[in-house]
Image (tube, rainbow, N blue to C red; front, side):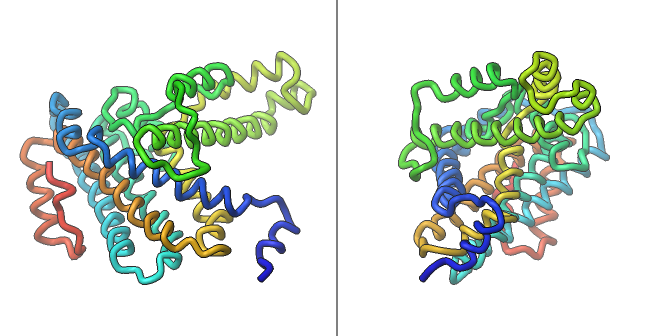
Amino acid sequence: MPKWLLSRLFNVADQSRPRFAFQGTVNWMRALAVSVASDDCSEEAIEALYQDVPRRPDNAAADTAVFESIFMSFNQLAALSAISNDVRQGYDACRTSVMAWYYVLHFAAKGMVAAASGESQESHMGTARAWQADIVRSGMVLRPFGLALTSLVGVACDSQIALYRGSNSFDLNSPPEDEDQAWGGLVSYLNGTADFERWKIEEQVKRSSEFEALGVDNFRTKAARDLRDLHLSRGEVNFLVQAYRYHGKANYRDSLFLSYGEDRSPQIEQFLMDLTKVASVFLRMASVYCAKRVERSTWDQFVEDVELNSQLSLRVDVLRG
């Protein structure tokens, strides 16, 4: 039967092609899930990563922000786990699951930032920037979550992407089957997000008074390119920026392709499991880090309190320091 809704949408404006939108969504999560199942993300690897993290001077207010953020992340993971375990029809829960997945990461990262520097950011991008400054740059993140770009200027960005990619040419047009293919998929999504963030910055520059003062409408002149590159040099991409883009795509038009068209039920079931696995490892990583930073003994008190008083069905093992 002709896809009437899809035809209507394409008559209004260009849309993501269904096959590629679906592949990009499920295969990036598959790449992340394959990666976090490796030894690089084992419990032993997490403990080794944070074994030398020093406890900071007591800061009750910042510690409270840590506990609040981690509990909010735990709450979202409980929802995601319940959906993954109990839903009868995976398609019904795809969009909601992606939202819960993102907020597991967002709140866990907020907790890590509060544990690292005591800062609390109100915006999503503010949290992403602070997380890159406090956590990623210091190497305090597991490998699949550590891919980051520090500039979106063409040559500098391309050099960073090439360093990550090496000779790995795998992309997200098919699901990865091993760690090497998963890494190629992760680099591909990083590159795609860099292109998207670069486009956003360029559009912002075009609307600026500085650009208008040049009297041009493109970046062909040296003055226009210099202005553009000044802004691009401040651009950053990390795992949280990618996750924010991902949740935005799933929350709007691309969500159509997670619930419409060909029946890909087996892939959808795997997708829901992958979302839960990736979120669980990210929260586990954040919990171990935060436990090292907050006032001594308070993390155990926090976990005990959650175990006693939380009405969520999720076990607290993911939180234990």
